[in-house]
Length: 256
Ligand code: NAD
Image 1: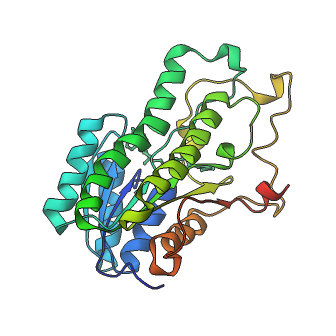
Image 2 (image 1 turned 135 degrees about the vertical axis):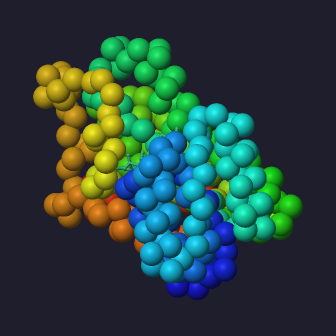
């Protein structure tokens, strides 16, 4: 692919799943990668995998819901590698299934803080550096749940619709300043996200259809590497005229 060799990338949530696959892919393509995660152990494992393959990576502990923590993450990228060319804002959490009226204020706030405020905090810190450089690329990780409604996942779906809207708006704000901002909308992907779900009920007990998330025209879930490939394309110069879009990477769900 054309264009990430020698770049500096930051990937949030890079200790697991889509973030880890993306960090490995960008390092394989020649980028120096700041592996950012709230969990040090898994983030460090990602760095070790990259280094074992001959790539360059640095771990930084970050909580994306904390804007100061995110600023430090970007500072580490600049101090370690001299700038920030690519930012993959991927960290996110999933709530358990619940009817909207059963979502607690605390659950709502926690999810929004990580999934939506977290993307804003990352953009705020990353775009300042990119604007000073005069170029940069951002890829936000939204979800199929950011394109269509998903019964039982009101807060998650709302947060991901927010990520899609933020992506479009920020792309417009920076389109004439050399910075591209896009997103991907993954369908079901084999990662650890389901293991970390807090709360929720058995979806079959809910009085409405909850199948949207699991029905995939291609008949299978994705490997994280299939997300990383599209992120790498969006980061590359092959996507030099692409900004403000959210690409569904969903085995055909968005077409259904
Ligand atoms: P995952 O749980 O395997 O990885 C998420 C990573 O984010 C973990 O390493 C976790 O420690 C980290 N993280 C969580 N909260 C954080 C915080 N506050 N600050 C920093 N890091 C934090 O999940 P995944 O499936 O790889 O999810 C990555 C992204 O993809 C998420 O935004 C998720 O919503 C999105 N997504 C996933 C799927 C799927 O089916 N797996 C589908 C659509 C969208």
